[in-house]
Image (cartoon, rainbow, N blue to C red; front, side, top):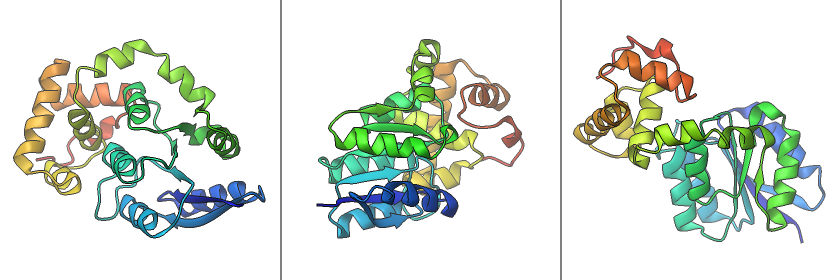
Length: 219
């Protein structure tokens, strides 16, 4: 019987490559694909699925991506294994993804062929971690420095460092503006930052965002 796989990524060329790699094995078939978290969860609700291969950051659509998406997948489809294909090398986010139930981690920079190995490994009942990401997960200093944050604070920090304003983050995560503002301030206080410049420097070092987001008119 064919393995039924759903894939999700907001880059059409990545979707095309992932589909090609997966379906090059005659035992696997991509039964649905999506370009955002909303589309992925809708496809999962309508289709019998054996495996999910998804990106982490897909900001378009009406539902939050990132860890909120992974938690929704685990809550709604606890028996469907998930492989995360991502560009992030942040140890805290990767560890949190594993705690969210992700069974496979693939770094996009390692080449699309790693998806094939991840799919076969996870479908055999084992976990898969891309060698490049395994190296990142060994960076205990990064894990310790960000482990003081709650999952919600880390998610707010990731989106804020990526250039989103407080209002946009509140809409994406379906929280109030005051809640998002409070979580950002709490995260900065825990990390010992007194201004955005320190926050963005840290975010850049830990691959959470980029320093050029400074001065973009954040709330």
